[in-house]
Length: 442
Image (spheres, rainbow, N blue to C red):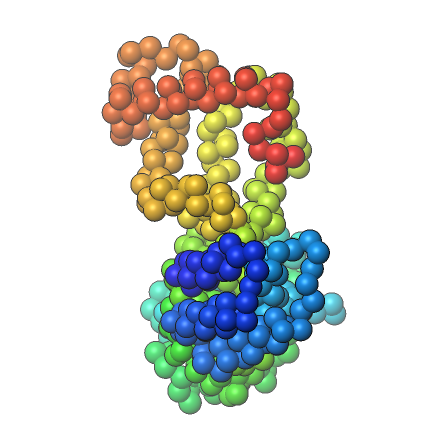
């Protein structure tokens, strides 16, 4: 996520950090390099100009801190301005307190709108609401079926109506259905087009005129660059939007859209898509994104992801001495599934501060292999009986051959897993009288 921009900014700021004293020339050179890094990242030139102007002004006005070195102050100021450009604070969905909240998702074909609708439903469920999805895309083949599949993954009902039924009829029926079935949030997945045309705009206007829309969210592909900014401006002028959901941000190494869109439209980013899984939609926090870009990590989001995947009390149990001493393959298997729920290894690495993610760089470069390894481990443990998971010591040669055959792996791979588990259990026992291996989970 924004790897190229992040790496360049870290290099620039690291040079500043190493200096005990910063001259006027050092500051000018750093600002010049930051400007070039932003332009290369496809950030809109007006935003770059504003960014550098604010940073220069802040640097000239900033009084020296007794607790921060000059280099650290430049980093702090860069973080401040970057956060301001991104939107300063989180922009939340406005829920209607007097009835169902209607959220209109709009965008072009290929932006990931239908998948995002289901991901958004899952996010809203976590907030304590009962969402439902309305299939208002009657144009794209299999759009309704895709929404139904994704809705099932999110645990949200899908109201489809008839395939040939007019969109407005479907939406009106869905409103009545929602009242009868006590659904308090309706997410409307509208039809997209290959480009913005009069037919698309009219259909969206008709929907907004037919029912009260409380949030109009434009789904944009972050990989589109400056085209996404032009599209955002067009939709905002012709329809009116309340915010944006940026998809495929995990594949965006430059970051031009995410850094430009707030300044260029005056509208906030509300969520970002960071992967293909149903859980891979995150609320957008400008300050946290600034920290990620500058290599400071985002431990708050990581902790929230961990807490969301565990039941109440589970994290405390993991930290207990008894758990570490009695650790078996069942426990190992459950922790593996929790890791997969949190997200991909790549997404976890992106949330770690630079000093940690840097030390794991060799793993980060091979996350595809790591994901395959996790899947193999899961398959091997899944092929064991419950007794074998509780007492790995009973797994002899014939059992190992059976497990390998059942998991589609080799005996060597089964042996490797058992050896790794034995080593891990030994470490956990040694740690039982020391500090927890996962203090941030406590």
